[in-house]
Length: 89
Image (tube, rainbow, N blue to C red; front, side):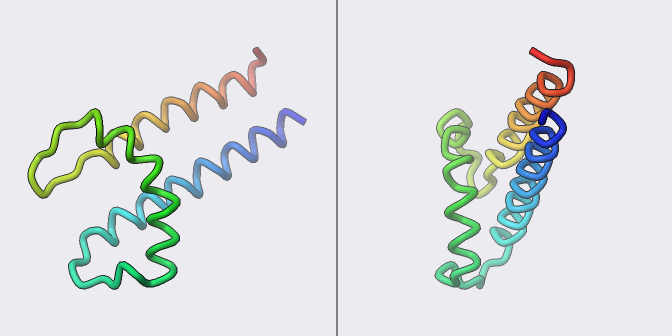
């Protein structure tokens, strides 16, 4: 059971990391159609996870470092959860 939970955690984290990376790359493309269903779907999945970090990080002009900070924070949370699952509570 624990191995299945670890696998599920790994999968969820890897999918979310990939979605975040795709979202960042899409944000660099100036003429991207933001109303496209795929772009809109990725944004709807990633934006809520970035919102708390945007409130904490002051604006730096056109540069948004919230994805970098979010990735670091979620990496720490992922590692803690994974360790708890593999070593026991």
